[in-house]
Picture 1 (cartoon, rainbow, N blue to C red):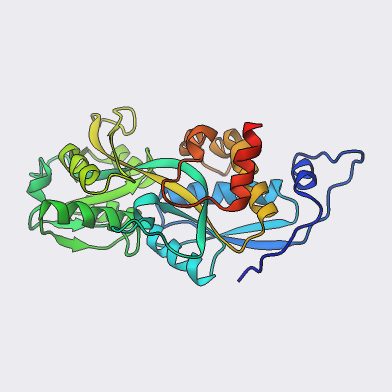
Picture 2 (spheres, rainbow, N blue to C red):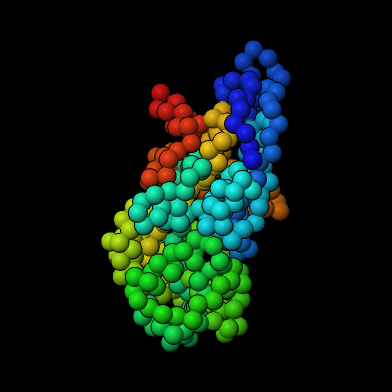
Length: 319
């Protein structure tokens, strides 16, 4: 549990120090040391990659803060850990946060909207599954337990009254199972491109099944977190552009983190978008999803309230 407290020096000093400057002197500001844990996602997921990049940059740019990542099953698991105080920061898809009656989990808020995930339905190129209804009775990976993929794929299946032989595996495990013929199809709610599907497409011919009708059904039933979208032909080798549904992802924070600390984290996310996207180390992969982080959409977190520290940052940005 992180107890709310005031950080010293002021917010302005924290941000100046983060940029290597402090008005009137050359020393870095001294602030209370704080160790934060950021819940990411499973192997083969964009959450794991972008969460690692965010943790690295917050540690580098916010004096006194050290951020380590925590592997998870993704969205629903991250929400559970945030509410239980196991982590202080976490990633989640917006639909996993908003219940059918519009309520949101207590004790957590948003720092910002990051990028949109797209629902993939992947099959091998020779599969008899040509459209969504062909999934009936088939062995289908619904993602890891407590993941955003599980949440959204089950919602899609319920809306279509389609019953499948559901399996639960991470994206990397699902891709391996699809390749080996252990399942017939896999859902994946993730950024574009996503590592597990990219690697599979580079080695084997695969297809994406269109989900345009399912996107319309989701938007009609739950208009807040969904929008029809397209996975472009440039996303994966040899795969045509495919219609689907997009879901925003948000960076979450416990409400009891100090406002000044969250202000500095918010500033880091938007100030260092370019370096987060380009990794910057020889042993690190680029994070192309980070290029989609911008101030205009960052404030759009639907009914999920922004943390007061993030509110202050966006307000100052307008001045």
